[in-house]
Image (tube, rainbow, N blue to C red; front, side):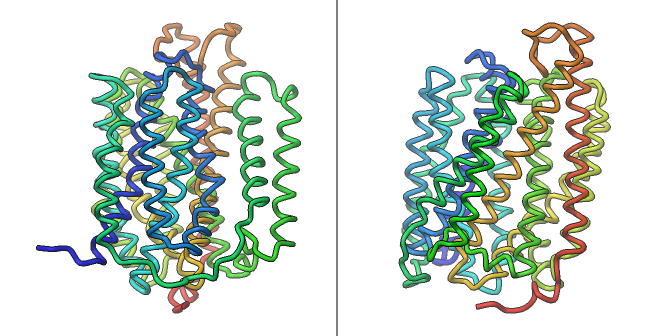
Length: 475
């Protein structure tokens, strides 16, 4: 049975966004092996992940603006091609410097793909965007089921390099499906100049602040005061430029819309917590003795629950409003994170960890589609690219900040517990009981921190989101 153009649109956007998710989850599983192969410490592992997230965060808004102006399908396709080429470079990387550059280039492609996939769906499905985004989430969830065990198997049995090569055949399929999909609407937004100063300032601001948080824990925060200063000044200048610009990258008038503002604030907090859990819990599982493949399989239920329930919760938010889901979901995520924090040994993983996965997965399924749909449907359709870009930007920024801060917490607590300056927290080959206890304590405090952040986001959802406004039709 032939697919309709709408179905091809859904298939292309879901698989396109899956490129980013596949690399994200597979790389997390491979990080300990890459650390050994490329002679990295914890900071090096962070940068392989953060370099990708940083370029995503810096260019989501640019990608959304380009899609609104020149066609979402066109910019989406360019992003897919760029991502595939950067993946080849990452697979061939001979050292840490090259792979970090490749990850930055992947992030550029990923920003164009993810932002425009959601905006394209919003444009095509209109009032049924909640169900469509829920189904999009379920379809991308299939990739997250496959990616961790596939990444773990490739890393364990072949090489971590193959986790990048798998993107090539997927890119060819996406481009084919995109050619069969619903074409772009004519002139969703009038072509206006791109906000180059704003783009440079936001990239500089978050880049320097991330560098301060990641490297400061290793070399000393007082030595890197200048990076904190440059980052802060850049972000302040970004706000000033956007307020004065005739064609701002980020129209601040959108923040007068209640649901838009609070859904993005909750996204910032909650996705920060989610990224902190995904990164450090995966590293901790291998620290306790699980293989890359085993640690990846432990996270599979999260994806299965997303596949099964994301469309249902997206439709529920369309019918009754997202407030309850965006309040209860983060509480379940916090409960799961607290259970992850009390895992002390390999024997604890299957009892405490399994219960934690159930709560965490259910909470995640509740919030993914509703929080994205609330942000996108709060503004007129012609601005869907900018809305999608901002929502993805704050999600990545939350991840950047929390990954860096959680890593800083782990590093500081670990360093305060040992005089061995060559020791690395969560090192796979750590044998000393005192060093292993120091690693565990640092990880535990990091998990407490992300659980607290999830609870804070639940309060934002309960007191900030309006069901009445969410059900209003905005054209």
